[in-house]
Image (cartoon, rainbow, N blue to C red; front, top):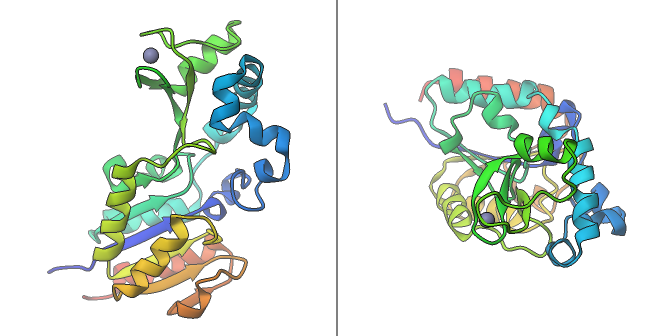
Length: 244
Ligand SMILES: [Zn+2]
């Protein structure tokens, strides 16, 4: 039995039920506050120790690391466990798909992860919790332990390029899948927006689940406006039960 590949593209909307607001979307918190946006903009971050100090304080107060997966994240993981081949492409940095039980190798994080730090000089990585513990202990801008370089969150900041390998894998999955779900994303930011178009061009069935209209609603096979927390579990349950 060869079950068709299912691709789930998730954006900020899938995590709002977990208490994580939209930070980086077109109308996200960072975009509406120029001072906050500086804290997550590569050029400012690298050039100004004061920005880094404030950025670490922001990470310290950020609730993302304490958030729990919700019904939508769990439904995706359950679909995978039911034997359906599933890949997640996410714009989120919260790691909640993996916490819900999705194998990490099946989750592509377009914007990186807030759960790790990375050195801007030697690219060594480590847990965010550990770096935040150093901040708690009094280091205002904890340097890399390997080389003394500037540490940052392992997320893609404004002004940074997406990892080309992650992006290439996301495109490959999008081309190969038979079902493509765009969940909680406005589809206004590249490359996520483009993926929905690629999926449709390659013959996938495109389902969009989002509270607000998206530029791709016109070409979608199905547009769902009901809350993600109920819509996605329902749609994915139907999928895992369908005989194919
Ligand atoms: Zn380093």
